[in-house]
Length: 250
Image 1 (cartoon, one colour):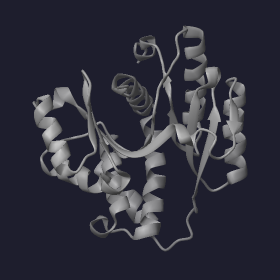
Image 2 (spheres, rainbow, N blue to C red):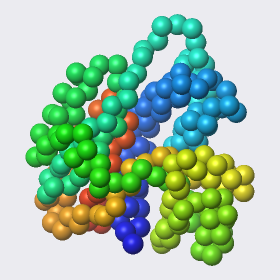
Image 3 (cartoon, rainbow, N blue to C red):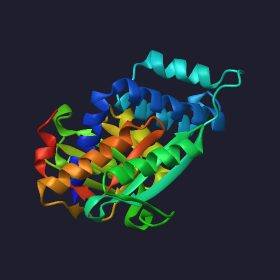
């Protein structure tokens, strides 16, 4: 399986989030706003809001910030209205990329996304051009060092909670669920005292594309960083298996 490669991607994304925590909190705040708009401000009756709160906690977003975002989103003022858009394209060496955005100005967002692709030697594609290479799944990642659980115990806990699969890595367990089961599985595992590195609905690549040379890897990393730095971009998914050197610069 490609669990190790996917874990490297998760670590890279988390490292970027840790380095720009304020921007990540702002982006999660937008997701909270969308969730509140769709289902109300009470997490007890709004599963999507519960999921976003779990994602916020996994990103170490303070509870005060979470509650402030909920209150702001449930206010009666006009506020900013965000619209979700997804873009697909190819990076250097044909790496498949999916970019999820929340924006109040679609023209600005698509222009910024296209520029990030073009400047990195990639190209923005049509809808559906790369999505077929990914599966939309619930993804819960647990740091093995934070929990004294052997592989069999973790596997049993996850499957009993309704998970589809558990990918065992040296550093983490990656629990995969059907999107419709994600909330129930996450809440069941939380109820057993587990904490998460990430907990979200994600686009998981079916196969990883190995990037063997450092020059191409550098171009791919630059493209991902440009996309992730855009204010309107919420998530960037890709199928690049980058060399381990990517993990050495914190």
